[in-house]
Image (spheres, rainbow, N blue to C red):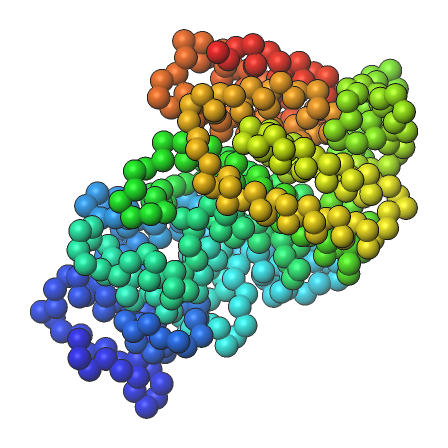
Length: 481
């Protein structure tokens, strides 16, 4: 393909011929789609640019309407995203009445022009990082997850045929592609919106104006998405991991806690404090009931998450002051069981850190500097667990043990509130799917019914009852081997 180059007018010129092989035409299309950039075949040191999803949309690349079985990827990824994936409509959501009302209440720009909204409902890179083909109205598109494509878009198309000497995934990563085969990186990228960053975050003000509260569990969320990828082993020619979903759950729980605590650090250091979005929402936001019917008052207010008492403060414990909203530890309650399964010592260390942080945040007279210090050290601990959980071994007996450990912690988890119970339900469902993949137990229908019963109790947050939810968890536990 001699003759490719940038003309004096700054536009990339590619002298295409009608007798090119199909493979060369694929590469030619990818290069042509990056209008205005230097040739993509070379590993350029130029700053990467966002090119937009149209650069991936050729039927010979990722725009096929059918799944290709003779290639390393399905090649219908763009078609799946644009037709079935809710991320493709994220920008359009900003034109609805709720988005406009949020904008008015917070005195923001029109939602489709507001940087705070565009950071997660679209891509909003600086103008200098946008190729001519970029369009913010494309929503949460390919490069939102995979990273700016200009430096790897062209050459990575030579890697679509297995067995050929071609551009590798590692080369694409070195050229700027985000390595989403790494579960820690994948979770972190999802959480840039599902928890937020220093520039884009869903805080209590935004929630009060009408934005939904955010929660996340990687394996459950991936299962709910229209699949547009094949899970590829991180190492070439490695055997596919039959318990990949268990690994994904374990790793994502640690990353989730780490990034939540990093948000706490930001809020404590520079934001509004206390930031109520870090607390358990439904401790305050629920329909009032009579004192006789209050599960919260019946249970009492243990001072710390790992208090030995179930229904009231243990002897010598002052108890959490009624009315003090508790820290949201939904991103810890499942990780607690995961880490204990792997390393009981690390589990105790994490529990001690969470208890200290919980006590500090839950106090209405919390010291911002102390909270920031505690949150930072606990986030570091969670971060150190990520590579260990990534490298750990997962199998069917371990999956069953983890599932039962979560269910056997029913009283502990449910007393923390609706969000922690919700996280436990998602985790148990994911684990059961992985456990039963090799063959469903004879009582599968009863187990599925008990799982549905957990989610049914959370359809209306105001109807959540810790005692009933714990009973349902125990009923499910009795059905398992």
